Length: 436
Image (tube, rainbow, N blue to C red; front, side):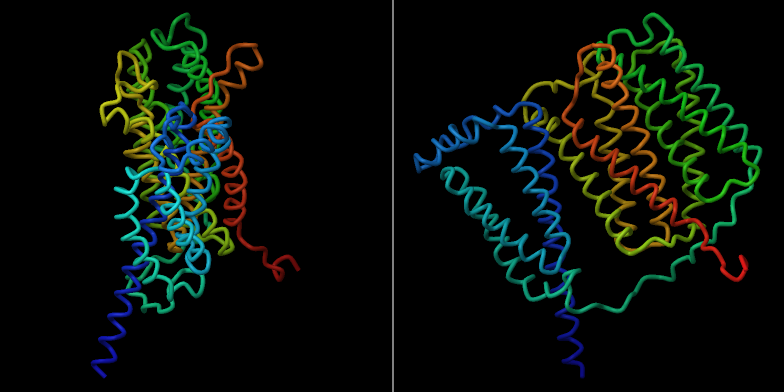
């Protein structure tokens, strides 16, 4: 009996190790896809000499005549392929088998670009091939594990029904303070002659477009706060809007030259941040029940995780060359200070979004309400981001798009659709007996 138990425990430990190895490789490929996309968006000629060291002349000729002739297409296709391989490995089951084959084939083909690449490829293959062989037998069904251990998680809090949240005086007054501050600072940014001095023209246009969006957000917050008994959907929408204000005005506080509204920015960050944290704590303690289908749970979870990883790769593609001695990045703040989005995303926003996605994948009760908050924050942020280019296009000004422009537009559309689906899932089912 003891021998059987030991074998079972050994098999379970082995499965856990192979699954962790597969998830590591999958996550690595997601990051590399984002990094390559960012490098190509910044300067596709970075890879001009990539194949010069190949010991086969046809590889070098094909690289220059075919790949570098259309660098955006080929390198973005490469980035997309890396992201797909990462997703296949993270998916598990038969999809992960295709992922293992893909990453091993990728490294074998990479060796044809010269012996210098062998210094990376040989150690990588020495890890990938044994990991794939060990993981292969377990990939017999989605999830990648043929043996499942009994759940050892502590008892999870039961989801709370949508009974609504009573409006408090603190909620009402904090909302009025926020709305007043946002209105004052936004009108200053829109009407003052030089509210954002020393900033590039494109950045000033984007800041003013964000000011206009912030006024809309302030109005929505007031509308949600004056309701006597806000329901679950109203409360979650409010949290997402508070997250947007805290994030946006942290950028103003740390990335905009000091102006007459600086103290107002500080008040907005303090009030929005405190209200947001208090609301999230309440959600964690009393998660609202959701009727969402399992596919929406897993689909949204992986969407948020991939979003966080890809955008981390985009920012690292800008920052890593600087860290390795490549000079100052093109995107930086006034006077060479760090661009505030870098630290806000890498230190706070992206880890938080990845964590929310993980709660959905693991089917935690707090996942659905937190997903709505994250999606609303994404929608408002990228709506403000795209407001600038839209205004520039409408007024015949130069349109400036960063490397995150394309992904952010896709995120805006997908996040809006997912948010609607999740908000609908919190509505209580109609009781046919009651209607009769």
